[in-house]
Image (cartoon, rainbow, N blue to C red; front, side, top):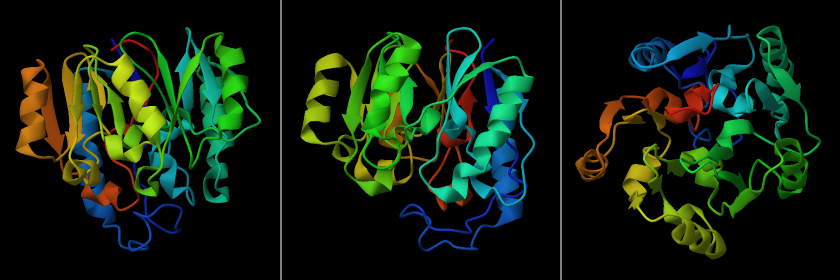
Length: 266
């Protein structure tokens, strides 16, 4: 059974401004509502996966977004994130200790790298990396050497979609759910060339973080989105489950941001 990592939102808040979603939401998080929303997502994911948790740490409000902690590969190996913004750099040691204590081999890199926020594997085992805002293109060579395989590099051009997982979601059957306008023209051409079946999110759905989805077997977990998008997912044979995650959207995150894959099985 698939394993994932989550972090309870005990200290989740918007206390600084490192992306456009945060700018007008400083100290506007409803902590009680955030907990309710996280608990519902946690319960639903537990119905089809093993959920491990890491204890939250005070003064690290974005630690709840465990997808940014690193990238798991091979059997139990992790490439640890190196956060671009100082506000999140305190998370690195906490996650490093958790991975080490749970039997993972941890690899560190010199360049900025924000884990599964910016690096995802598709159903054909190809790796995709988003650069432009958080993860540096300079880290690509480092990570390719660790993995022993080539990375498909994409350029993000709209800072509302500052991480790859906010606008690009490879689906378990081989399709792609994405928001094209988040990418430069060269990246769009590469994506159209590599994926045969593509679901393009509207700007309205993209702003709801519909592409920030958790995929487990035939289950697709997303924030609330349009009926049109849900119908497309259903046509491809997916069990689409939607949740209110608006408290986390205030910080620029949603379903996938809250969940780190601990294995490569879908």
